[in-house]
Length: 141
Image (cartoon, rainbow, N blue to C red):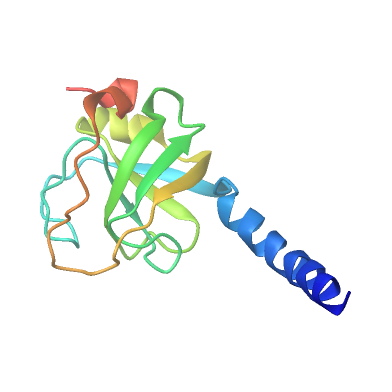
């Protein structure tokens, strides 16, 4: 009888953490802006479609994220850059056209971390490029 009670208590203690680990990652609210400057990112990669900048204390460098609420720029991005104005819940999306980046302005978006990065600077990103079918429609090559 004692063995049954012990097993039941262990099951009660262990089931919630297991269920929590399986939950879909929650989307966080962010303010999005856009940039169009080509150059080397904090990770050491060249900016390209699917690149984003974020605060590494919120979203680790190298993370693959899904951005929604950004209109035609909603899609999957890899966070490979940081910036002095990208602090807290801000995300800066790379848009190749300077005019489109300026017209983007500021938008309230939702960001979901699909895979967390290694958060190491100056080490080229090893996360695979974002497949073209997952890129935001407005920035597809």
